[in-house]
Each structure stands twice: as structure tokens, then as C-alpha cells.
Image (cartoon, rainbow, N blue to C red):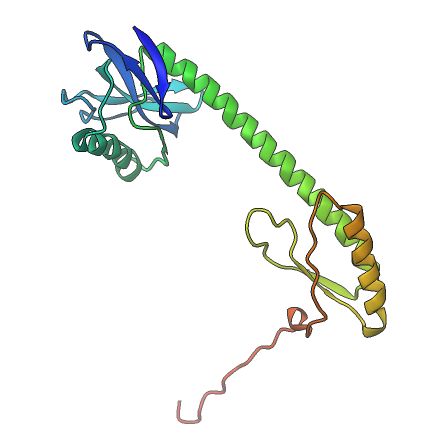
Length: 217
């Protein structure tokens, strides 16, 4: 018996004489769950959870074979995920079709590495967010004394860290331009700046219109 990765899907080669553990998706749950006898393989195997901490793999026992992506198999794989999501209210992380482990212990080991990768990803994401916030604070601090006011707007896309408008007095325009140029040089190679203007101060004007009720209303 040997295992290999093929096309991004973990498969096991064998003659089908023993069962393995077929994984449909990953959910956040610390409690044991069952989802009905809807498992892959045509045997109506029970779908249940295998746990590591607060992570759970949604699995069923299944013949230890290479599963062809036939219409029936693919629909069964998707149906389990739909039941988990629509009937039980979980948000599943889908697994690739055909993901199969020899034992539940192998599945738990996979969950341990999945948990570690997820934790690492969160740490990296938080570190990047903290670094971006630090850059934004430094940019605002550098430009603050050259502007009357500033306003933060919604960023566009996942690469933009700052989208801001600054209200600048006419006699301070050149000074503000110089400050923007200076901060751009400081972050050269780390950040790209796109600076446009001057524009009418519509970011700093709020106009409220109230329709008067007619006398007949």
C-alpha cells in the first residue's frame, strides 16, 4: 500500500480490501457531530466528525481506493458539504475531491498540521496589518502640519493600505506637495504613492437636503 499526491488530491492506491477515512471538508467545532448516512462509495456510510482541538474534519469510512470523479461521486462529495452548511449552519472549508486517509489517527495528524498552518497564517496576517497601520500612522504624522484636516476613505483592493484626502490651504499647497514628495522618498521600494489634486473639497462638505411637506400633505 502506498500513498501519493496526484493533481493536488491525496489518494491511496490499493485493492479496496480495507476501509479508509474520506474527508469532505473542515469545520470549526469542538463537539462530535453526525450528518447522516450520506457517505461516498455507495454504501450509505455515516458522515461524522474527527477532531483536533476546535477543528473537525467531516469524514466517512470509505473503501481505500482511488475515487474517479464521476458525476455520482462528485455530487456526493458536494452534497455532504451542502448538508454541513445548509442544514447544520457550519461554514465548511472544502477539501479536494478524493482526499482519503488510511486511519482516523492520520486524519487527526493532518488536522494538527492544518491547525498549525492556520495559526501561522493568522500571525502573518496580523503582522502585515500591524506593519501597514504603522506606515499609515507615520504618513499621517508627516503630513498633518501641512494640512487643515484629513479624511480617511475606504481602501480599494487588497494591496492598498491608505486612501486619504487632505484639506490644504492655498498658501500651503507647495509645502504640502513637498511633504508628500519627502514621505514618498522615505518609503521608496516599500510603498507606491499615487497623489492627485488639487480637487474641490467635497470630502469635507456634508450637505443635508430636507424636502418640505406640501401644505396638502
